[in-house]
Length: 233
Image (cartoon, rainbow, N blue to C red):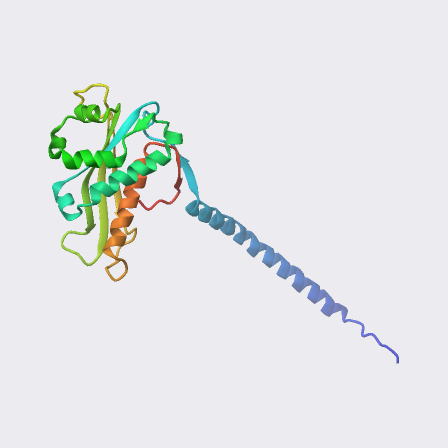
């Protein structure tokens, strides 16, 4: 059997080479446009899902002992009777487990603070210095929750949780101390987006998420921590 070879048409070959070359150039141009967009998109995604080291805003618990006292208005306490207790224990737990960073010499357990509050109804009339002296601490942390709501007034069908908190710290070396040496205001929301109703999430879900966010934000004030770059609260 004789094998025969067909010689290619030189003009057609040149055309094919040119077509391939032009295609490669076009692909390189397109790829060149995509690379910055791709890199930028990856960087943006990494930023949104990553975290950043945040330093403590108040560092003077180091070498001191402290108590955390949560205050709520009567209106809030009437609507959410367990709020003060939940927040006292949640904040204390986060701070105690991070004491390797805080380096406090001691603290008053949340249960003891709550026991005092329940057994001493007049405690809110005490001076901060007297409270600190009662607990035997040199730093008193007051967490004043003056707003806690789940929805806009008059609209109980759409969730719009909001919490307003003021953190105040008393350097309690003076028994008559009445002023804070440090204050910080927090405004916290949940859900992160508008339009959610009771069909999307329960009342307990909204309350639990608000409480967790408040506890995190209050505790983070006192120690270095990793904080999400895109934090919704």
